[in-house]
Image (tube, rainbow, N blue to C red; front, side, top):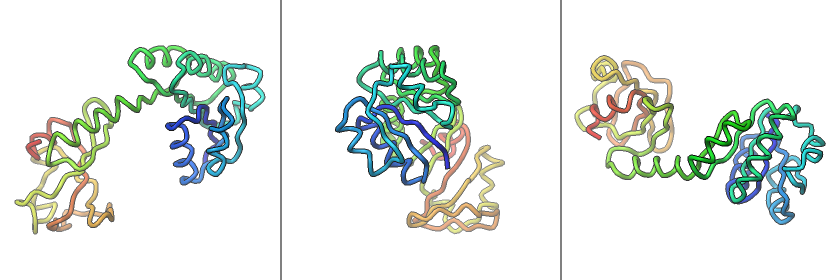
Length: 215
């Protein structure tokens, strides 16, 4: 369990609060609009109405006590930038800020953000990859080269074992898990048999995965 400061409670911030709540983390939520603060009260440990660009207000929160500070402000970049910078000045351990453009991302990183999330860009890339192919059900980008893809079991592999296919030697791809009816099985071995209707999580370089599954 982590102690998290969440600043900015618009739609994006509210979703983060709800997910952090499900994960069991302690969340302090901040926004300058009372209605937004009220809307997240069921999901957070504590909440305050305040201006995150005010250094006195931020300092009163005890910034050093939080494991992560998330700046989810989306419609006021100046406030997002000032808040990010102030958090770092006040000794925040880890500052994660939301960007809306590439320029925002660069400025946030230069002014105190340890990491930047760019929801629109990340979702656009996910949607483009996911829906431009019949062979991708989901994917997680790890870096510019590697990713984890969820793909259906190819017909030629059904009824064979992972060892017989030898995907790692032929394509430099690792099978991380098998999913059947929404249940993920990670305890797989070379003797694991691939069945019809299952999907698998594979890890590798984009080019190797594209070549293997003809994506």
